[in-house]
Each structure stands twice: as C-alpha cells, then as structure tokens.
Picture 1 (tube, rainbow, N blue to C red):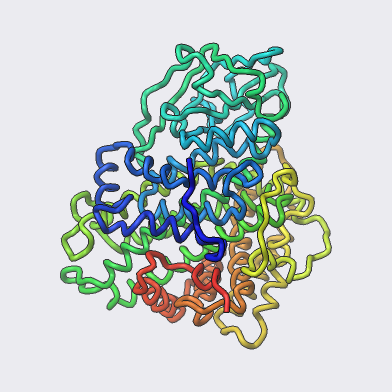
Picture 2: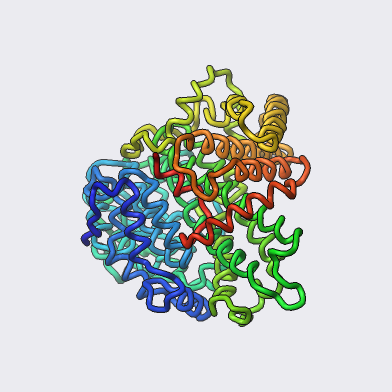
Length: 581
C-alpha cells in the first residue's frame, strides 16, 4: 500500500494536514467521511466499509509502522493527530482503523524478525487485532486461559478472546496465551496468528456484541481450536508475553487520547454552533451568562485533554522509562475529563442532545445532534480501552512510592524541551520502556518549579492564584501519600489520592505546554493566558477549590468562538503550538 506523498518542506505535520484535506468537509455529503452518513450507519449499527477502505487507500496504516521497519512512523504526534482528525468525523472509523496500531505495537516492542513480518502485514492494509481480554476475566490479563503449545517447528493456540475489535475482519491477531501452567509473570506468551497461515477450520467466531457505543464496529469473539502457525510467529521470547503487553500499553494509552480529542472536537463544534442560534423561548445560549460560563468550562476541559495528549505522546519519545506512570496518569485523567465535558454539554443542550430525530430543526447541519449523541456514546469506551480507570488508578497507586523517592529535580528547560516545537523528535525508543519507574514522573515532580515560572509578574493574577493553590494541594498530597500503608489491595483512600495526583499532573501538563509555547505564533487561544487560567481553575475546583471564575470562563469562551469562526474545525492550541515565528 502506498502512502500519500507529501513534500518534505511542508514540515513534520504536513501529513496531518494532507490527511485532513483528504477527508474533506464532514458537512459535505460527498466527503470521504460525512456527518450524515456517519449518523445513518450508527443508527443501523452498520460497519463503515467504504470509509475504512478509503482511509486504507490513503495509507494511514503506514504511520502505524516505525520508519526502522519501512513505515512512516517517526514523530508519534503525526498518527495521533491523524486519528484525532478521523475521530472528529467518525469515532468508529478511527477506532476500527486504529486498532491495527494496537495489534502491531507488541511486535515493535519485541523487535527482531517478528517486527519485520508485522510491518509486511500492516503494509497490506488488512486489519491486525490485539487479542488480550477473555470472557469473564475482566481486565486481569494474568488470568488468561487461552493456551499456546510451543513446539520445535510450530505453535498451537487453543481458547478464545472476547470482545475483540475487528475479531472477524482481521487478517491477523496478536494473541496473549498461557504457555506455562505454573503461576507467575513468565507464564504467558504472545503469538501472531495469521489467518492466512492457520487452518481456517480451526478458527471460529462468536456473534457481534451489541454495544452502547461503537455500534458499527466489529466487536465480537474469536475461538481457536488447535490453530497452528509456525514457530517464527512468537512475538518476543516465550514467557515474556505479559511484560511485552504491559510495555506496549504504555504507548497505546496516550494514543487513545486522539480518540478522546476527536470526540471532544465534535462535541464543542456542535455546542458552539447551537449556542449561536435561537432556541425557542430560551433565545440564544450565548446570551445567557450561565450558559456562557458552562461553555467556557467545557472549552477548558477540552484544552486539558489536549495538554494531556501532547505531554503523553512527547513523553513517549523523551522519557520512555517514565511511561509506566505517565501513561496511567494520561489514560485516567483524559477520558475522565472528556466524560465531564459530555455530561455538562448534554445538560446545556437539553433534549436535543439525547432525543433521536431532533436534529436539523434550528438551522444546524441536519445530523449535528445525532453526531453529538454518537460522539457521547462512543467516547465512553476510551475509559475501558487499554486498561480501565480502576486499572490505571491502581498503577498510579503502585507508583506513588517511586514518586516520593528523593531525586534531584531536573532543570526546567529539560522538562519543557520535549514540548518545544524547535526540538526534533526521533524514533520511539521502545527498548527503554520499563515496567516500573525509578522516580515517577519528572513533570509531576516539577510542578512547584512550573508554578514559580509563571509567577513572574507578567502572568495574570487568575493564573498565579490557581497555580499556587494547586501547588500547595500537591505538597499536601505528598505528605498524605507518605503515610499511606502499602497494601496488596489498596483501600478507597489510596484511589482517592491517585485521582488527586492525576489532577496535579494535569495542571503540570497545562503549565508546561504554556511555558513551552513561548515564542510561538499567537492564535485565537494564545493571545492571552485566559485558557491557562480556566484550565487551572477547573483543575483546582475538581481538587476542592472555588468554581471557575465567570470572567475567566467568559474570556476563554470568547477566544474559543474566534477560533471556531476560523473554520479549522476544532478549538485547539495546536496552530500556535506547531508554527513558530
């Protein structure tokens, strides 16, 4: 499959702009992914066949393959933003196509000949799935019962996986299976089951799952009854399956923020359009102070998720040894914040946000509210992908002793460097991923220094006050965490602390993105620090401080409306963040 060629002088993100142009205007029924068709397919729970075929013909899958293996993946922000652009139009299409990135990632982590073989599979454009979970076993991968027998020249797989995205449609699946009946971390292995290699009579399927979100996706079960593939199908050494999966999840978790941001983009686009139009006796939402404040807070939530997305993907390049904690922080707080945004906007939009068939009655695109409803349902699944919220909170709890371990704070310039646009970002260093960190997250540890950096006499009082409050709360959290007993089964207090640490990390992300953007071309959201004030006040409120100030929310809404009127399709920090003077 040949990827679309883009001139090298167009910059690192030129492929993202080319992909966005290829997808076209979603309001155009003739676009590759149109809003109207997306909603119709969702209502019928129909698979988006034509859309997937078009995106594959473009060659999106080439950005799932590292350049070292013949693909286009260098800076991981590129495919992440491509997925965001796609999810903004249709979350299902993005999740279905992006599943191949998840299905292939273990081969990149394992390295060796299996990575070369996987690259060839992905290049065909045929889906590759990730077979991890099993019916009745929840998120505990160590309980996997699917078995693999490794012989001198072949590998036999028996058992089943459920529910799996693209289970029926995939050409191949990376399967986690038990290779040793003895308990322990070395009892599981990974094997690539290529359906073109195995006897098709040994592979069966369960019925498609009827789901609340991702209605059109091919979520189903798959069963292996003595499926035999060659010994060269092992992904990594025998017994290293769980370790490879856990390291792979450190990369896929930040990747899912692209899905969250796509859904959030759709929600804000609909809400800002609707707010400008009369709504019966209520008039315009933009004329109501309470509604304006709610909209401003929703924008703040969206920008917090975007900051998490940027920090997550840049950390994967710059500090892979910290991704055990960073990926869990991003994966918990991102979907949790997106859920809050959808909850608040659903309440603001009223019946139009939940009643099927209400769209198109007030001057919006005929499928606008149907698309909002779809995005609201679809986005909920991100909190389940790649470890649910409880799993990620548990990982944060396990990392708290490492975060508390004494360490020399890194220079602030070193912390901000990965977020600067004038610093090159090379290939992902999967060999440096670790199951546990030594000292937690340097960004979180730098929160007090980040606060001091914005407390410079030039930053608004709203930013400084919120930043100081969060810094003091973080200091108190460190003291509480030191007194937390070590337990095999954490108690509710530990989970509560983990949530609050995640919010502190979110504030650190926003501060770091703001400071790293110094010198960037100012855009609609970069003309002042209103966005930062709103994000920090929102985080502080979730930690127990006063609600977001009405004037701050109003200022951010005005900036967001200017950005929205620019026709870019999203309220984002990225235009100013990616272009420099």
